[in-house]
Amino acid sequence: MQCREGCGACCIAPSISSAIPGMPQGKPAGVPCIHLTAEYRCAIFADPRRPPVCAGFTAESVSCGSSREDALQILTWWEEATA
Image (cartoon, rainbow, N blue to C red):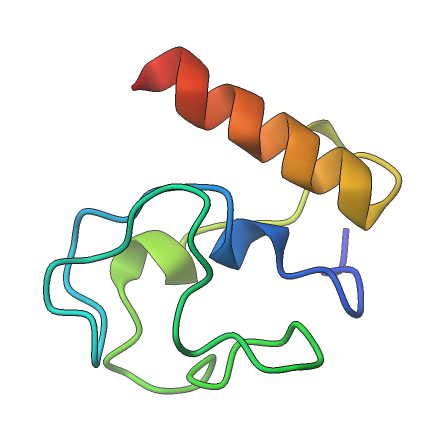
């Protein structure tokens, strides 16, 4: 599955404990990454400094559902269930 244009749920819903350029402490769940653009795209997608956890995420129907709203709901639930 390709990433959905204008989604960005994976850059908002999950917490990231590893350092991100400009966010040395990572980011809390529900907080948009500072590299999420107004178009909900990752501004550092091709940057080698992008955290491995971000680079390793693969869009799949089980995590992304059928809409941006589904993806936010699913990823938020996973975050809460594993916190």
